[in-house]
Length: 359
Image 1 (tube, rainbow, N blue to C red):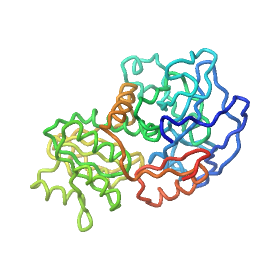
Image 2 (image 1 turned 90 degrees about the vertical axis):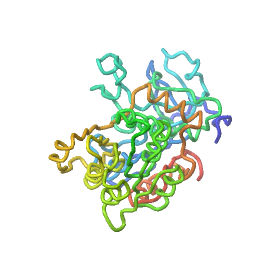
Image 3 (image 1 turned 30 degrees about the horizontal axis):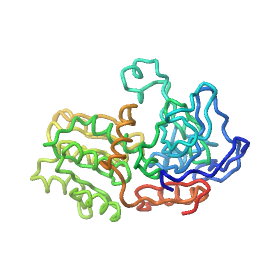
């Protein structure tokens, strides 16, 4: 479906919808449930595409503290405005039938973090597919403030990937990297691939990437990145061999395991920066004496500001970012199988679920 295509004609007489419900660890089932009813400041979006995020895989396995059954997963979304609440003017991005994407982070708008442009740190923040029902369904209810119109020329499929693009922009922003710096990204899933692209847009020419899956590694090398093959040694040992023992200025862990976090740290030059992106494991042992003696900076990258999200949409629309390969479109009913396949290591960079659609 392209942006010029319109969704099937619907009336708000529709009361039930298909939704993929997470019911227990590794158990997701299709159900017919009630279509959400708009609150005064809400918008109802007919979902065109719902992306599966790597952060949801731990939730699928029952290892996430913020995703509890029963729950509709999904926070990466594109679709069409179906209805609006009584206090929402049906104009602009909220006009009925408009192709939209949605910022899935909902913040209070009043706290210090919100008024200083750091909405992702709001203590009252909510997230679609976690604290709010998500978009693995035919319809999703969202605050009107988070709805953005899809720019002319951007395919509705690609518009579903604004969220990971915005996240990558925030992570690179936090790193403080300069064009003359070198970087390592461990993990070439969607986030890792977007990180590598954003680094390139920031002018970083020396970009190393480590990824066990050959198909994903090729996607990264096709972006002009230098592959690290740790088959016979550790990532850090190979990287230091490539750099004459120096290491890189910035390392991004886009996996979130104890081993990948340590390898990123051990790949850094003196005074380097470690950016922790992945959320797979909660606790990790790190050689903190090395951090102290080498004056290593460590920062977490949780999410994105409203500005990052808008910039991510603009960069996708302009062609500066985008996944050109490795994207799989599957019907929503195939969602349970795809969650399991991704857990098992399927090489797809991004899986987009399409309610009511076929692969």
